[in-house]
View 1 (cartoon, helix red, strand yellow):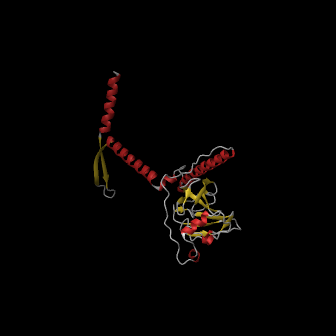
View 2 (view 1 turned 90 degrees about the vertical axis):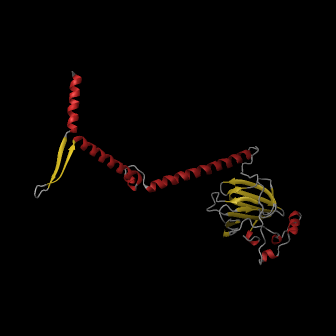
View 3 (view 1 turned 180 degrees about the vertical axis):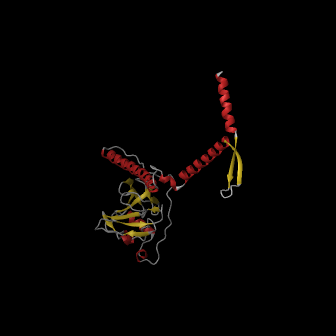
Length: 288
């Protein structure tokens, strides 16, 4: 009995939804009918639902794909989004520097404790490249340079205490522009040379690698010991291609120019030349 009543009510409301109504529009001046149409309640609900869906879709598109989304309370502004991205990059860089520092301090601790420190500097198995460099013509310094055979003999003679550096043929570590000159009094014991990014750094003379590691202040550093109590240093590199104890020839690639270390403010090479424990102005003997 109840089921029959429910069926009857359902049939009644369904017929009510399908019942047609006449919709007419009249001209207000002369009351003539200008438009007429037949509609049902069901069709009205369908039209309203369709309009609602279209409105919601357009609103969502405007909010997600236009700058209007930044007007939503709690949504980050463009400046804030850029700052979040920048801070994320800085955190990654800081983590890298912390790892390098921890590695550096760990090695120092091992050295103090007398333990053997493994060589962790990246090194390539490929034989170092050879740079073909030619002496500069019409230069007063290079006109007085000796022939290569004489250079070898002067470097192999350790008995001579006084050496005329102008008679030694130095190879430029890199070709570029000098941006900061040698100044002994303020403590700038080298020459800063700017060149193309990832430029290759070459050894200035034949010698032995006495240091090839990373430091907090100057990044990857290579130091070479040469004959006649000469030492050259190459700082702020992004990578080194030699390891401690390795023999190198003048012109061999020993490092890649970088912007490493707290004291660096751009990609460049900080080159130092030391003779008998005293810093010497490299520009007096090398044309960069």
